[in-house]
Image (cartoon, rainbow, N blue to C red; front, side, top):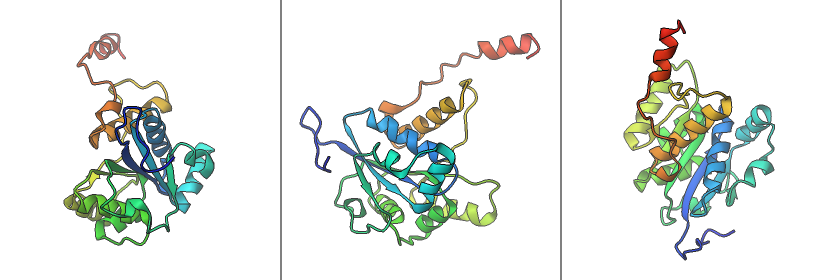
Length: 211
């Protein structure tokens, strides 16, 4: 499938860049790709770092090819001349899921020595949504300063912290919720999680019964 592929309506597909780097939490990037794949109006552009491939194997039992099959277009980190490395190529949003501290630091300082950092830098300079699922804990001052610098440049810092008020029953449900929150944060509201309805009756019942 080419970058210029169109939907059944004849309108151009909306390009979304997804990068999976070597931090723990490769499942988030996989789920983002799965959700976007369900929508015919999106075209996904995937960058897999070498460390990201190792993490996918270890955490998800997935090969690089397994994950590449979820995307419409794939790139190697060294492809600096790729379409997504240019501001002239229309991109709806970019998500780095998960985002390693190495990648965060490169983006925060404009050190664009690979396609992940270059594509992210393009999003920042063009004023496009860039979300970084920074995955590290505890955080030292250098980490925090890098996050501040990236945020000051326009990035959205979104550590994949699970939400429990929705009462998730499985890890898959927690991953799905976080992936959908990330997609909605970059403006892809079609894929947002079910909104919170304010119902706390379940919690009240638990308190009443000593839960």
